[in-house]
Length: 282
Length: 44
Image (cartoon, rainbow over the protein chains, first blue to last red):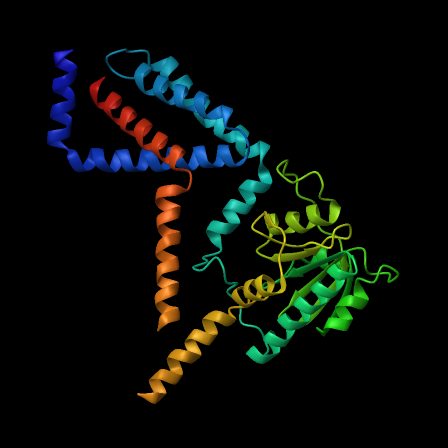
């Protein structure tokens, strides 16, 4: 026992930095695995990973001297992680996509549209008014605000439009007697790029069972792409917004305008304009 | 100026929440297990 204690003290006094780095990296790696496992409703696996990690270290150590079984425990962790990755490929793909997207501000899409801020404000006003009107009339709607290029196969599932966005046009598209109403409308800046598009449904089990296919599709696309969806419920007229795989319900006009302004980067641009005007005054 | 200060406050609050509130149980577990593993590796 005294010998073990001496070893710990010696190691910490001789190489404190190396051990600190080792500890930080181990903790970060473990947190990444635990967070991924928990997010995918597989919390039960956490205790197995904890046990396997401790076993791998203890058994493969010099004192215990069972390197084979220690290595097996180590491999078991790797295999468990791979199994989780295979079980949740979409989440893994989304995670990798998020890492590679270099986003600094998660609330704002990093895209410059080919239109002025005034056009964007008009577009936001049209979207909000259309959503409100459709909510009042219990007309279902699914609008996708896409800042980047959307995969062709999703756009090709609907009808390409590339038309100027307006409130009456949005309401026409979602009119229950119109041929394009049963699908999603893709909006980019102040233009409607496509309508009647079919979206992938979310496979999450956390979605309220009261919510139908439109909501599932609205959430599903945000799990795969960096887009924001606005969903108007046909049954209740409730306006919901989905982003990053999460749905927030009961949006009113002010909340929706605020969210869209953030997404379009208008708030940031107003601040920039404010700074510029202050500089001019100086 | 006010908006800037408010945004900074919001950012700081969001950062604090992300570091010290969100998934705090998992973070503590990772830290504890990381420490245990490092000590075990050194001791044995």
